[in-house]
Figure 1 (cartoon, helix red, strand yellow):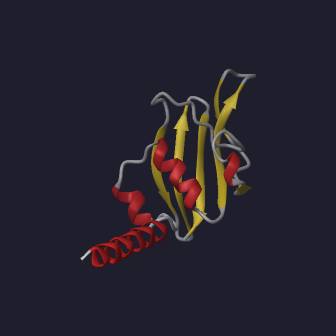
Figure 2: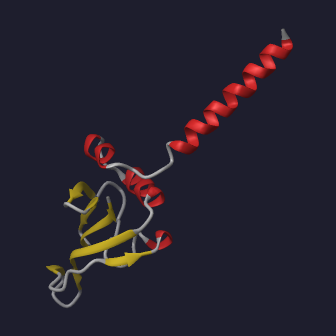
Length: 125
């Protein structure tokens, strides 16, 4: 009897480990469309994506003391370690960030807007 319980316990641990490792793969577009995007969702998107790019739409300009549109919008590669607060996507925290889903034919991502500007973290489909 104890042997059967131990075998069942080992099987259950292996099954749970398999489920946890397979669910940590790439975040899909349907998962981002259906759930409310928060800071935790953004961090999970950064962690699970294979390659990250950033598109800066607008940024804060100290000369005019306001947020201005970026004239040269281009996709720039970003490392996962510096994705938040680096190269066009700044998060201010304390619920002052607005997150929304962004999708094109070849890419999808999360758009971050706040008082520092607006940027989109993008990964390929």
